[in-house]
Length: 76
Image (tube, rainbow, N blue to C red; front, side, top):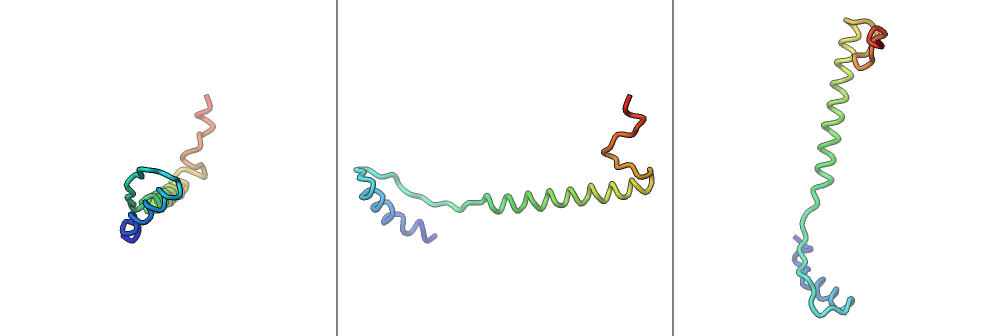
């Protein structure tokens, strides 16, 4: 990885600029947050689509009421 290759030079520059006698080792690791958030977006989109399909299927068999809405009889 390019940043890890340059870590020594970056470490030296940090030490000089911050006037540190001892500087910590630098190690760069890839950030997987974007990949994970993309995966979560796909999962959420698929779940919403499936819920909409089920609601449409149930609307055809049980009137116009969406399954997540309480019926007037449930208001007791």
